Length: 327
Image (cartoon, rainbow, N blue to C red; front, side, top):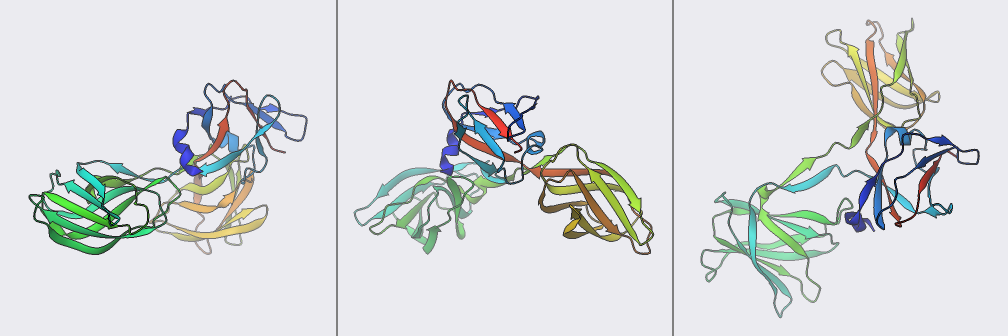
C-alpha cells in the first residue's frame, strides 16, 4: 500500500559502471548493500532510464540468488502542504454518546479574524456533516457554520490531506467543531490551523536529461528539420529549445518519433519554448518547424526532461541486490 512509503529507510545509488550481460538482459548495475530490512527508494536517473523501456517492463531487481523482488514505480509528489505559520491548538477532541466528534480549538493565531479553519486528516473515502460554533469563554457558544461537509477526499500522493471549512470572519477565542458520525467510526483529525497556516509548495516534477545533440536543416519547402540525437535512450516528457530570437514570431511544430508524428504544438516569441510531449525514449527524433514565407529560426540548444520517478521495493538486510535491464 502506498502508505508504507513513509517507512522508506534510505536511498540507493547506482554504481557508475553499468556492465553488459550475455543473457536475455543486456545490462547490470549493482546496488549499495542493504543495512536494514525495509522499503527503499531507487532514484531513476537519466542514465538509468536510458537502459529501460518507458513502462519499466524490462527492469528487474534481483538478489544474490537471482530471485526477483517486486517493485513499483512512483512519480514524485508535485504538491505538498507545508505548515508555515501558527497552528491552532486543539484543547480537546472527544466523542459523545450520540456518536458526535467534538473538537474545542483555541485561537492562538496572530491573525485576529479567521475566515476559514483548516484541518489535516488521514485519508478517507467518506463524508461527514459538521457545525462550527464560537465562544470567548467556552460557556456560551454561538453558531458560525451549520451543515458543512468534510471528508471524502481520498488522494494517492500521501496518506494525509488538507480540509478547509470556510466561514464568516470570526474573532472568537475558541471554536467548537462538531462532526456528526452517527453510528460510524470517526474521522482521524491530526491538526488544526487557520487557513493560512497551511500552504502548498511546488516541487519540480522533472529531471533534466543530458544535453541533446542536433543538426538543423532548413528546407526550401518552408520547413526546418531539427534532427536530434541522444547518447542514451533517455525517457522524455518535456523538450526545451533555445534559439536566436528574430523579434516576434509564431511557428507550428511537429514532433516525429520513429518517423511518425506523435504530437503537434506551437512556439512563439512571447513564451518559453518548452513543451510537454507524450512520453518517449527514442535516441534519434525530429522536430519539424513550419516557417512558411518567414525566415528560419536558428536553434541554439536542445534539452529534454523526464519525470522524477522512484522505484520502490522491499529489500532484506544482508542480501546483495542488482538491477538487470534492457532485455
